[in-house]
Image 1: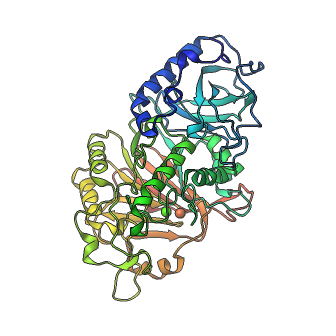
Image 2: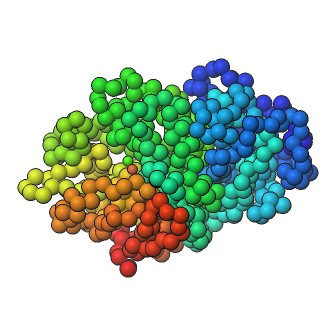
Image 3: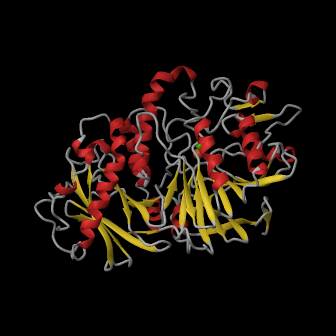
Length: 533
Ligand code: FE
Ligand code: CA
């Protein structure tokens, strides 16, 4: 099979089902994967050299360079990784500047940065219905190794991306280096100093993105609006460089849909019917722009984001979705927002952050995990925080303080089942926190797990003063600093987990200059983070 020949023998179910509702396509996701793999196997045997040769007449020219949004990889497994791109010669146009037809996209994976040793190749189809987004699930790769990849469409070749598979599950994984980040409001310059610094970090295996990848605007509502927000965000060369440098594992928070939404409610309770449509548009645009697996293709207003990634015997990431299944918190957005004195209603046992099914899935995964470290990668701060300044406790009900009973149950589960080294990583706060989580969920008591909250990539600080004033009321918070933007680097071995809180001076500058705000260490079995420097 010639690389540049039309791939009729590997017809893509999405094309054949072009007029069917998107919902029904998910049922065929497994077929589709099988077909992509069959294509991969066929193509890999073809003795074709690099993309060097001219595209054939089967690859009609596009109106311009289709790779303006960059390339990305994600959700690494031992033998497999997802490669992503979206064809958009005019990224801010509603149709991305693409003709309304299906386009073949070739991809290649090599072991060297010059793409000379190509080990896998294949072709997938980019369809207008999914904004010409491409999710190629490549497998047959070797575990624990670095790869390089690129795409070709319409005679144009993409930039080269770099990725890394997870280690062989039957081996001992000596170390893992990863970073986590969140909250990247587009800056005035379009630059992200934190991503520039991240792309320059040595030896990172992956990045976990904890949400607020885009920020909804007051008039955001339809699919075209959400697509434009992703295109605007991805115009940053620093974000594209970070995606090209390492695989991302992403989950969303509220702003990918609507500020402070919960479950099927917008912040204004009355907006419920319209909100399902908005959530469907938002989740679909999310899928279209992230390197997630085909199993994340949304069904209307539902998407499956919670999943597990395992790095051999060292780390299991339990990636959570605390927005889609959340119980709406008992506060009125128009009457002062989510900061309210804790009333009895908040502590009702039925209130949930994860919903029943995800909670069971998480418990089963924690019970069966054989990893030294168990990371709960999620969005809103889990530690209790009392923002009050007199006799009345004040809590932010948009976080886990809005579901204290669910938090008590989760932390008691971690404690009673003796889950190995649980560590909670969070975003949302636009500030660094290091806190102790206790079995009771209260501020005092034996720590069950440390929580690391990472500051924002670029989004401005929130509630700095009120948090600072209330520090004495929150002795379980070991560190708080919201002055600077940045990300968190974690270097993990079986014996200890090193945390470096990285900060940049000017989040919108073009500068790789990064400094370390503080270093913490979590020793195996300690269940709390200690400050090193
Ligand atoms: Fe944010
Ligand atoms: Ca948020």
